[in-house]
Amino acid sequence: MDAQPSQPKIERTIAKERLRLLSTLERVWRGPMAILGLVWLALVIMQFVVGSKAALASLTTAIWVIFVGDFVVRFILATKKLRFLKRNLLTLVSLALPALRVLQLGRIFALIPSWQVPLLQLLASTNRSILALQSTMERRGFRYAMILTALVTFAGAAGMYYFERTTPGPGLHTYGSALWWTAMLMTTLGSDYFPHTIAGRVLCFLLAVFAFSIFGYITAAIASYFVNKDATDTRSPIPNGATLDKVLAEVQALRAELGALQRERAA
Image 1 (cartoon, rainbow, N blue to C red):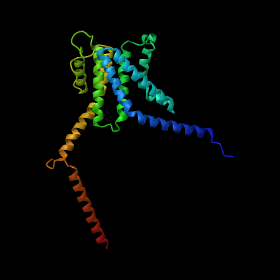
Image 2 (image 1 turned 180 degrees about the horizontal axis):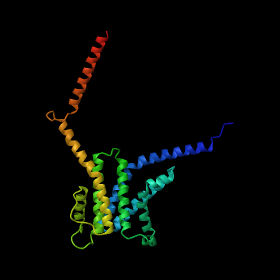
Image 3 (image 1 turned 30 degrees about the vertical axis):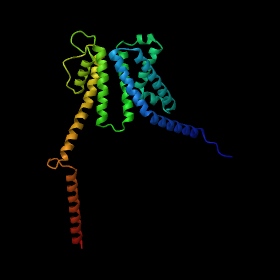
């Protein structure tokens, strides 16, 4: 009689097949889901700026249904479900907030401060788009940093306009002014306007932390580009690749001559 496979071996085989299927699905869905992630963020920004319209709400709901289906499938195929939930916590939040509105669970929203719900929605939607961007761009280079900064700037401006538009006196009463203010914050220059609302201050702090983290990388990348460009000029005092190759060749020639002299003396 043939020996029957043990239960642990069967479980390991099933886990491998699930991981393989999950990897295949993520590879196939990577492009379309990335596009939907950017569209989702654009719709959220439009809702923050122009308000909730019927067409925007319908399109947002349709994309939300697709995201929910994708999340459920990946959760079912994941072998370590708790780890999966921890890694996709903000994505889960971005999917849960529309679900609460669809089910009209007003009592749950009543327990949450009014300014936290739109802030969580904006942060979760931005995170969803950033994850989509990461999945499509294998190298996190200068282009990735610039696109990421642009996404955060437009989303942050929408949030600042939404939270600060009703404050008295001079402020961020138009999306254009909020976009300019956020762009200045991204360059770490800032402006003479300080947020008045709690949500605006929290969002301002998060944007400032992001700007502080990314601005140094962007300036270093730009400086590196000009240094490399100067290095290609033969008149530049900065050594270029050709100069380094010539020096390396001379060092190798000197080593060969020293080796030959040592062999002559030994003989």
